[in-house]
Image 1 (cartoon, helix red, strand yellow):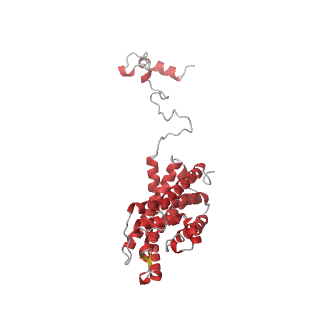
Image 2 (cartoon, rainbow, N blue to C red):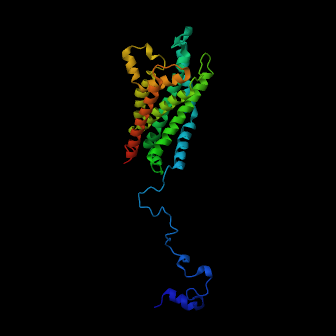
Image 3 (cartoon, rainbow, N blue to C red):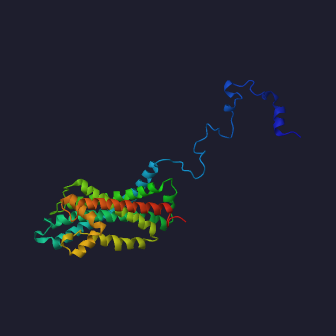
Length: 314
């Protein structure tokens, strides 16, 4: 019994030639020119030589980080009337109510008009609250809707995932801060000129980072929207309102002064007010360094929990 290959040789004897005879120079019997289903070692990708589990991307995945950041920014910017301009209008209502109720007859606080005194605190309060709202929503909605895999599957490291979410939250905070500042600049009887821009930027950045990290921790811990609302209503809002936004801490009793100085929100608002007015309830360097250290500690804790997959991985 003959094979099909032998039948082909018998039928077409003139087409079968000895190896290397009558072939073009570039089709010789050299192994380098043979067609094979196995890639040569010189042509194989270096990625295929890596053992399973070894990272293929080295360094920072800038493309993935940029994509995540843009996704998070677009998420809140598509509903900017709710996420940017609504907080600005709400903060402007705070200013109007408190200046009408408490700022009549030219009331002065720490040598400046009452409206000018509370304006910087209202701006940074809106910034930090919206930074918390943005970062606390990212992973939480993924856990509830079951699409958190969209955050976990892309080739992003823990630091890159953190940077994308935190960066978008800080971006929203500065958008809201600018919107509030713009609205207040058009409000009669209020001056929002900036005396020390670098200090205003620093304390705005530190406050936004602090609340963005706290929001990301909340989204890791929370299992439903009620849990995030508990942190927002019983932690963030009271600490921001009781941190000297509408009053000077110097007017409090020594006991309440000590309690206020233990509140990190107090240093954010006091330092941000110094950037606008040049006056502060606390030493500026102490607040600047203390907030930096606190943010580093929060970032380390968030990184460790996110890397371990706490409450987000099976």
